[in-house]
Amino acid sequence: MANMETASIHQFEFEIEIAAPAARVWQAMTDETDAWWLPDFRAAGADSVVTFDARPGGTLVETSPDGSGLVWNTVQMTQPGKTIYLVGHQAPDWGGPKLSMLKLSLETRGEA
Image (cartoon, rainbow, N blue to C red; front, side, top):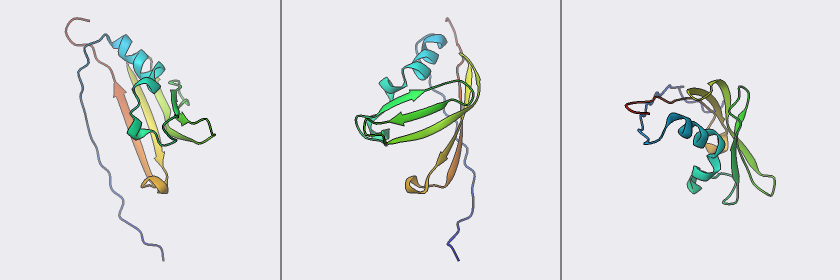
């Protein structure tokens, strides 16, 4: 019989203040993902490229010139400029099987 672990659910909430208009943050988050994606998180190699199609059904994908790649997340729902919900499946080679659900929300505080 296979060794099975008890399933568990973990919830984390982080809040980060960014000194920029929400529209600019959204643009950086969705259109410029490769520019801020950390080298330590590049699963397909140092020369990989990370792209983000922020429409429902779109994906956050990492690809490399040799054809290697990884779908990090799939977009479940989006309200452009405000909120995006992502669902990710983690493979056994990466500590899975795991399912992650991520909500990214932008909120303007103070002067915009």
